[in-house]
Amino acid sequence: KEGGNAAVVVGGIAEMFMDTSDAERIYLKRRAGFVKLAIREGAHIVPVFFFGNTKTMAKLNSPILRAISRRVKMSFVIFYGRCGTPIPFRHPIKMVLGSPIRVTQAAEPSAEEVEETLARVVDAMAKLYEKHRPAWETRPLVIE
Image (cartoon, rainbow, N blue to C red):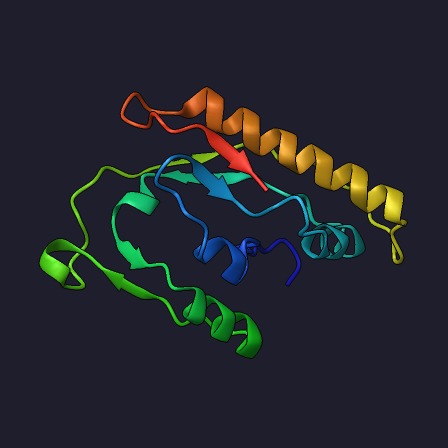
């Protein structure tokens, strides 16, 4: 729709199974499809990060569940919160928005255009994290 907004969570199943105990991890460097789509549609990309969301629920990180999830392209993750229930752990959440990454519309973007734009997105996410990281978030950001 003209003038509308869309949110895309690009990490997918791969990101759901990443271990976040020692670092905040996002799966972005090999996710060029959303960039290609944004260029085709002439849609600017706005980096967004939620601090604290990986602390609200714990998960059973099973290699078997990961393999099944990847195979059927649907996540089978066992999440749990307080006392093993679906009630989230108490933890602050902070959402931050970066400046739009402008793209020039092209019906068939070149691989170089997509690569360059993705590099700008990765750089913007890293800067967004460092600029807005709250004092309670001590883990570094790892972008894979």
